[in-house]
Amino acid sequence: MKKIITLCLFVFALFLGTQTAVAQNSKLETAQKVNTEAAEKTEALRQFVKFDNTQRDQIYEAQQEFIRSSYAIKSQKETADYKKEKTKAISAHLETRMKTILSAEQFERYKQFSRS
Image (cartoon, rainbow, N blue to C red; front, side, top):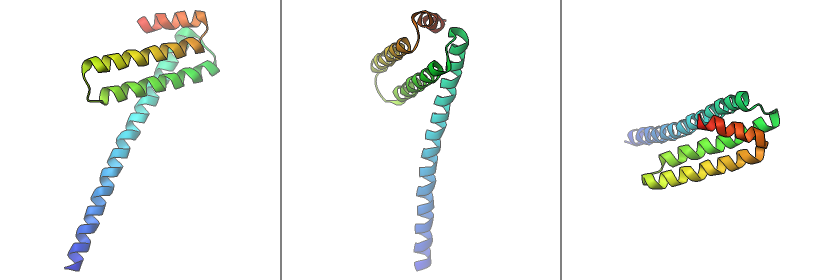
């Protein structure tokens, strides 16, 4: 009887460990998606806007923050209006950050790139 109880507890502990590993794996996948998208957008912007390495690093961080926030908003169980309002807010924040990072001419090119 003790062996059966011990075996059941062991199986239960393995089951809990598996669930935790799966949850961490999905977070890792999301982080990888965020980093990949941010790198792609930054590189596309770099080719169109022409900025230096310091600006590239700052833009990459801004893109990461924006994409991470976008994923968080999409995963929330809120109304469409709320999601739209939050998306506008983070878009405005991204634009403000881009304005501080880029020069006036570069920012105009960025706006042209964003519209297309």
